[in-house]
Image 1: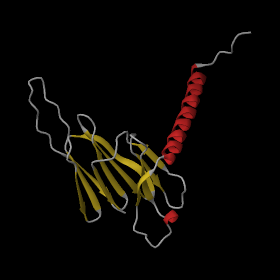
Image 2 (image 1 turned 30 degrees about the horizontal axis):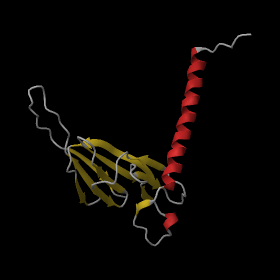
Image 3 (image 1 turned 90 degrees about the horizontal axis):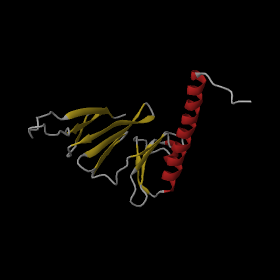
Image 4 (image 1 turned 180 degrees about the horizontal axis):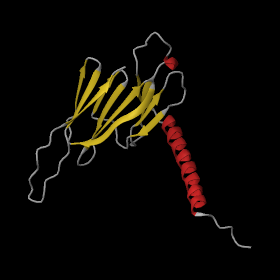
Length: 174
């Protein structure tokens, strides 16, 4: 008796199931690991200071010894994070928190990294992740947080760097 043969579609489905299971296990591992690291900061993502802490949205920053900063975001009435993201970088050189918007700039080799986390309609997300030449500017105007990111450029074959305008991103405060 030989092994039963699978059709191409069945083989793809089987591999997909294995991949999804591995992804679920690794994400659960990241969440469990990040929960053991000390809390560096806990930042509310709303202005509902009259409510009990567990009834609010918040960002939580954790970092184990020498490891990357882990950002977790908690929805209202949730005891486990809806979003857990390992930045892969140490504590940021710049951290700006304005209600539901969290901006981090981390030092990283030849280029810094900028991360923006937001809550939109109560759900957290990584709204921006990109490299930068450094000196990210963050402004608050009315209901928006504006993040200006100097674009990292490299010289061409002749050694000349071309001028590139900064990238500008706008995030709504809720």
